[in-house]
Amino acid sequence: MTADQDVIIVGSGMSALIAAITLATEKNVKIFTKEPLVGGNSWRAQGGMAVAIDKEDRPQDHLQDTLEAGCYHNNVDMVSILVKEGLPRVKKWMKQGMAFDQEHGILSLGMEGAHRKRRILHAGGDQTGLRWMEFLHQQLKNHPNIQKYENEMVFDLVMENGECRGVVSKNTSGNVSVWRSSHTILATGGCGGIFEATTNDPSIVGDGIAMAYRAGAKVSDLEFMQFHPTLIKYNKKVVGLASEALRGEGAILVDQTGRKIMEGIHPLQDLAPRDVVARVIERETLSGNQVYLDITSIRQFEKRFPTITAMCKQAGIPLEKGRIPITTGAHFLMGGVVTDQFGRTTVPGLFAVGEVARTGVHGANRLASNSLLEALVFGERVGEYILEASGKPLSYVMHSNSFLTKAGGSYNLVFPKKEEIQKQVSRALGVERNEMNLTRFLHWLDAQQVKEHLLANRSNWSMEEVEIANMLLVTWLMAKSALERMESRGAHYRTDYPKTERNWDEKQVYHRNAIIQSEGRGTYCEQIIT
Ligand code: SIN
Image 1: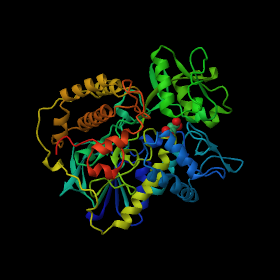
Image 2: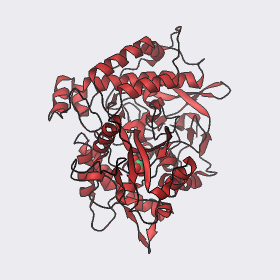
Image 3: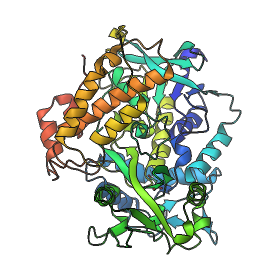
Image 4: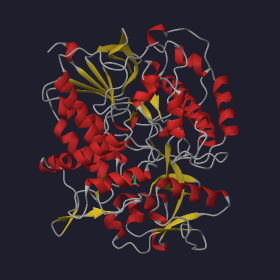
């Protein structure tokens, strides 16, 4: 096998490993991660994996819940793939040894917000992500066709004639390497780390989106950042996530007086969709109330939620009082690099999977526990597609103009501190947005030379400098998208346009060009330089 036949995967979360294992039956796979292999968002996933596995449940019901939570901004065909293929694919991995929690020999199915049925498979109580990752690492161990490169940051894509032909990386000693590949898969996660309060690993700052955009790939729906309603915050510090499964098992949101804050707000009350709950909590907090999760009704709390118990104990939260103090925080990006059902981006040779991809399954607001299912279904799909497509020419359907080859200018650049970017982003792109804050933020980004950062040659930059430039670019794209969407929908809430415009997407698509129409709904970011 020549080096040109290698598949490169950038990122090491669940979707990356599923794709790698699928591909390694026939391909030589290289996995690059800027962090150690053990770390990142997938390890942190608490809730579980939603799948219509119960005999009383149907993929069609799962589809309906996904669309409703997503405010019908979803791509229905992609959701259909997710829920229909999800079931047999999960069963296959279970046969191979992935174990989920059971009670009396029967799968124990959890409940989460906006699901009308119990359909959440979980493992180790609230350790589903960790158990999946341990299981996948077992499969990868000593695999002759998989090479892992830890602490090696991919900072650019190799582009030739508009096609992606590999990646450029830098290790911790600053050595730059060029790696060629026939297929390159981005699996770098979303960008929660650009916010002050987040459930994400701090390293997740939108690297894949920035790289793909720089290479000319289409990105879309970046205004839709999901805020998780219940991050544990104690003594002014974010401690970690309190899974939505807590509310699924009976926890309720109360203020310091014990008032139930979701009562009368939504028919599903505490199990309303995340965007609804997050906005209520945000407003309660802004009006001076402290919001808590009242967990007194949950039986065997410590056994069912060992991770949350350990986090609270370590932070000194007195669980015997039955209340966990919470706040909202950036959790999951519904938008990202536009892909089709095989993970193909608009750049030939470049694929995207997991949170970095905008498959369209999540719409404007992701349904709880659909992300691990997405990682599984589309991780396998991208692997299967590449195995099948090998040998065929790379050029296909949508062609996009790459300007990366024109990049490489040298500029006198200043790099703002990450904390400053996080502060500015949290103010402008938080749970509630408005034109004034978004415009102010875009001016601030201009002053940080966002466009020059985009065009500069990065070879001599430190990893931190690359991350900062990526943060500037991704937040610029998010703010542009948020400003452009003059309505509220799902996770994108504009105080100056609080209503959902029934035909917003259709109207926008109508005004745009033919390529965009053929790709369907969404806020697309034009290339800054073409
Ligand atoms: C949670 O456990 O609440 C998070 C899981 C998810 O985002 O799907």
